[in-house]
Amino acid sequence: MAFKTGTSTTIATATPADHFKTLTKRQYPDVMPHQKDILETYASEFSEKADVALQLPTGSGKTLVGLLIADWRRQKFGERAVYLCPTKQLVNQTVSQALYRYGIDVVDLSGSKKNFAPADKTAFLTGEKVAISTYSGLFNTHPFFEDPDLIIVDDAHAAENYIANMWSLEIAAGTPLHSAIAEFLSSHIDPQDHSRLTGDWIGSADSNWIEKLSSPLITKLEASVSDIIDGHADIDSDLPPETSLALM
Image 1 (cartoon, one colour):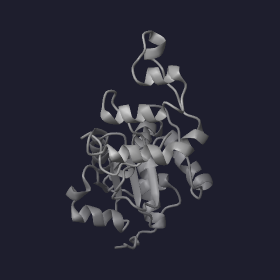
Image 2: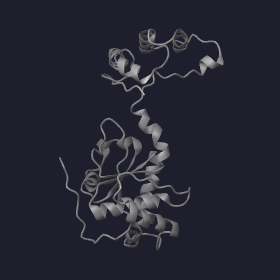
Image 3: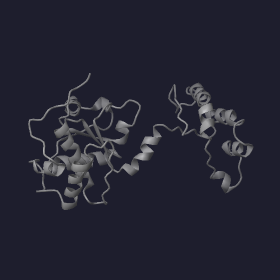
């Protein structure tokens, strides 16, 4: 079911920095000067850009900057905004800061979506409150956040592994699937690489071996490798059925 975003009766401010002054539950009288500069620059030069990266030193209050941009856009443009953190612990910390230090109403939508409170889901879907979640809350096969208007990624440099893991598959050596993949690839890689793949190595150079198939070869083999994985999904219990393959 589609939800319309809410419309606030409060007149939106010109910048996220000004928005902070309207938050009656905040513990601070104003943002710091460097935060004000970056928030005003964002509003005047980048608020209509699709992809924006903001860089601030550690301890400079980047969490407040991100939350203010999210809550300002939620109010000004009626957007559904989600603020992503690397871990559940950081979600808890961010929610606490938002509610009890900055006076920003947010909802914690991390963890299993079946456990989300109906009121919290509605608050996000209608644009009433900013949602705080983890990277994995968005980057998974069946996310609750299907079409957010704004995504803010805290510690974006740390997101790479979380995102890549959703499209990567590790196959343990010695499993039937590993043996099947190694046999299939034997005619497509040189004998030394095949020996390394099957564990027939003796030196440190072999033990640290890493190789990538060429992109044209990946395209050629992708369907066959996917069939092999699907055929072994019931044999190797750690593999889900109908596993799809993205060779990276």
